[in-house]
Image (cartoon, rainbow, N blue to C red; front, side, top):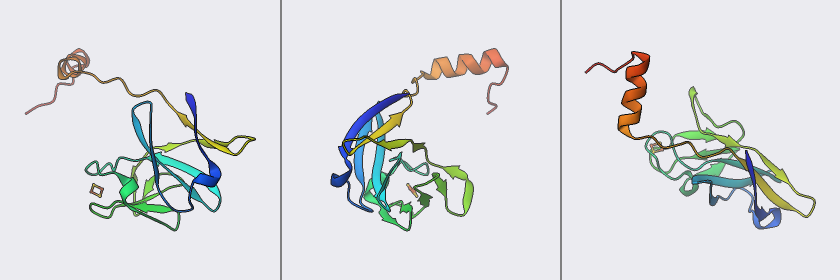
Length: 126
Ligand code: FES
């Protein structure tokens, strides 16, 4: 887990998205009730940037098809089986927001994915 010093808290507007890319991961950073929150900026439905959506009542609404996600736990409202990643945040003594980011997932080729399935005996059927 890497920790990135991102922005002074007083430059993070309440309820407005601040988009950053850390470890190749697009992240929506915002401030709610004075506290920094960070979630994935990629909508799991169709990949829209949640930073272009509306932040209200502790949730962000995707601009494309209006799915709504909690900025506290990442859960899609009304569908607890769908969620976006939530990143840990903390405030430094000098007022900066730090974000904890796990290493980016390793990208694998289709060949590697199919070989893994073949080794596990779980090749998808047509
Ligand atoms: S892309 Fe976000 S709801 Fe469809």
